[in-house]
Length: 35
Image (tube, rainbow, N blue to C red; front, side, top):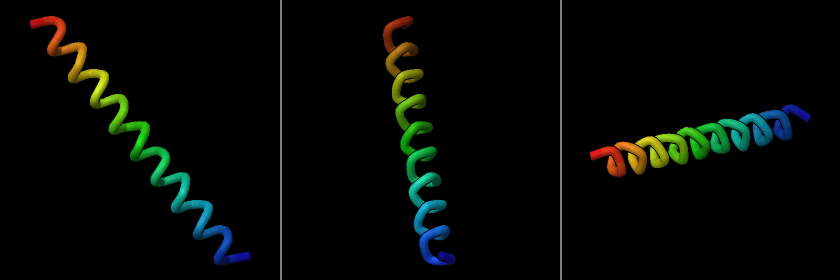
């Protein structure tokens, strides 16, 4: 159970980091379009 919880939390963490990277990329694209 403990191991599963750790595994699950790490997946969530990776997912959030991935989402953040996507958002950063989108912001960069918008910045490029504005210049």
